[in-house]
Length: 248
Image (cartoon, helix red, strand yellow):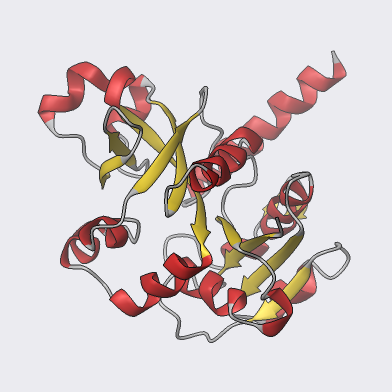
C-alpha cells in the first residue's frame, strides 16, 4: 500500500507567528517535524504543504517534497487534501496528516492512526492518557472515546462528568490523522460545522457528519506540541532532557 504523509505548515499562525520557521535548538521547527516523519518506515512519501515559499526553502535539504498551497485555505486538512489531489500522489490510497507543530510526535501514534484505517475506520487518529496538568490545559485537546475506541467528542474542556474517568475513556488527543482518500474529499465538501466553529477544532467536522473516527491509544506522556511561546520554551527543555538521556 502506498501511504502519503503530508505535513501542513502555515506561516501565518496567530498564536505563534512564523511558527514553522521558529528555531528549536537551532533548527526550524518544520525541519524537525519533517525529519521525524522520514523516520516512519511505513510511509512512502513525505510532503510539506505550505502557504509560503520560505517554508518550502527551509526543507529544501531534506528528502521531502514541498508544495505551495493556496494561502486562503482555512485548515491543515484542506492543505493535505489539496496535495492528495495532485496527479503525482494519486497512487496513495491512505493519507497521513502530521501537524507541523508536532516535532516529537510518537511514531506509534502515527502507526496506530493508520492501523485504525486499515481496520475499517474512515479516519484514524490517536490519543494518550491525560496527565494532571493536561486535564485543565485549554491548549491540550481531549477526546472522549467509546468502548470500541471511536471518538464521541473532541473538546478543550472536559465535562465534569468525565473527570473521574480520565484514564479510561477520555484521552489527550494527538494531532495526527489518517484518512481514506475518499473521506478526505468528503471532508472538504462538508464545510465547517457549527460545533467546529464554536470549539475551533476541525476534527469535529466528520463527527457532525456521521463519520466515525477511530482513536488509537498509545502510552503517555505525550511529548509537547508547539502552539505558543511557552510551548517553545517547554520544547527546548524537552530537547535538552532527551539529549542528556542519550549522553548517559
